[in-house]
Amino acid sequence: MKLSPGKRKRLESVSDSRGVIGALAIDQRDALRSLFSAELRIEKQAVPREQLEEFKSIVVRALSPHASAVLLEPEYGLRAAGQRAASSGLLSGYDTNVPGRLPRLLEGWSVRRLVEAGAHCIKVLLYYALSDTPEIMDRKRAWVERVGRECAGCDAPFFLEIVPYQAGVDERSPVFARCKPSILTSAMQEFSQPRYCVDVLKVGVPVTMAYVQGSSASDGTFVHSRTDALELFRRAAEVTGKPFLFLSAGVSNRVFNEALELASEAGVHFCGVLCGRATWKDGVGVFARDGAEAIQKWLETDGVQNIRAVNANLKHATPWSEKYPADE
Image 1: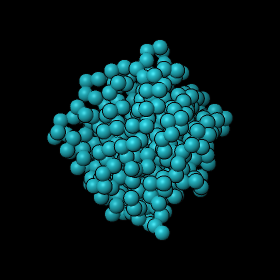
Image 2: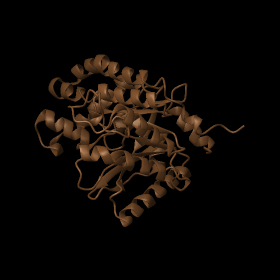
Image 3: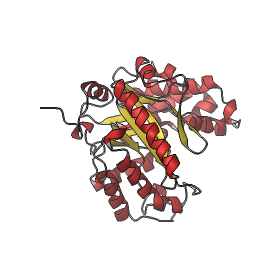
Image 4: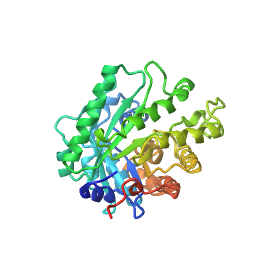
């Protein structure tokens, strides 16, 4: 596969010296509102915008020196984007979602405008289900094609985040844990096709760690043995020729690190992580209860410890350039 010089340069901007991506994700909007809502005991929409913006800014200032890049969105993240460490690149996402899990882009933004605002790379999120009707599936595929072409036109690397689901199935249930690997593997294979212009896939691990035997997240209900889980990691990796990185999907820091250890044991060539809540989620309560000074102290200790633990598990990650070798 080939990568344009412009895209290569921008991918280098969000990678470490090895070409591995160890990025901090704090592009959450509704999920972050939900965390604040629970802590403040108010409706989600009553959470002050200024509070979300301040929290993002403090997290970025404290943790971006330990990350190769920061993922932010333009709704609440522009202020924080300007406060990242000089060594940290910027990825920007501009997706939202409507009922039916059909994707929709934020009004007033385009790939070009995000690049002009300082973004090195672009990320969008797509919900994907094998239970989707052919019409819905086709609309989603066409949407990814359009975003991919827009990124190609601006020479901006395109990161596609894939979130598996199954209509009518609780995503926290053992039933979903059984079907999740096939949904994710199908999506990774589909969107690796050249027509989509995707440069990097952003995915959750192919198993639900709460149902993997031996995981600290398990309550004793198992869907996959450790051996099964290792094989599912390998199957997902085998279907794509694109570099891919793992997201933390809201699990704890300990559980995410267990998942990365499984990936390493399976020998899959993932190119890094985009880790969000596993790094900073526990700091939301600190900030909501005790304010900016308290969260700053928490981030300097617990937050830094969390991100360093994830970074330590990137020793077995492989550079994205493995899939995009430079021309002779």
